[in-house]
Amino acid sequence: MTFRCEYCKKDFKLERTIAAHMCVNKKRYLQKDEQYVKLGLQFFNDWHRIAMGSNSKKLRGVYEEPILWCLCKIWVICAGS
Ligand SMILES: [Zn+2]
Image (cartoon, rainbow, N blue to C red; front, side, top):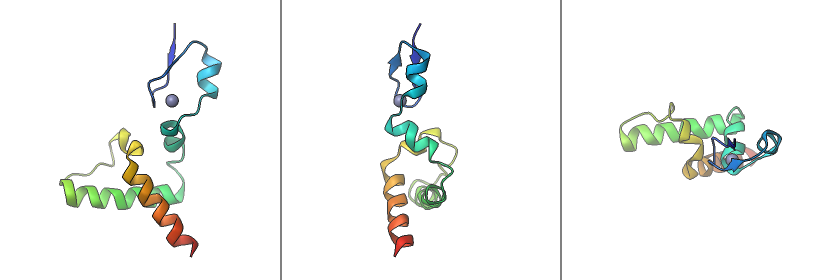
């Protein structure tokens, strides 16, 4: 029996190993309640709605979108100045 990380699809033999495992996608998903991520997601959803004609907020994979994290970084830079 193996344990699969739902974020990066990597398999682990031990449950404690996957519990300690931290990949980029998992880390980003766990940051989803941070204020700067919420604001970045709001910008991303606005962009997605205008560019693609649909709202991406319900897509679980949205936290794997590189452009979302670029928007979050831009927001942090703007907020820090
Ligand atoms: Zn993972």
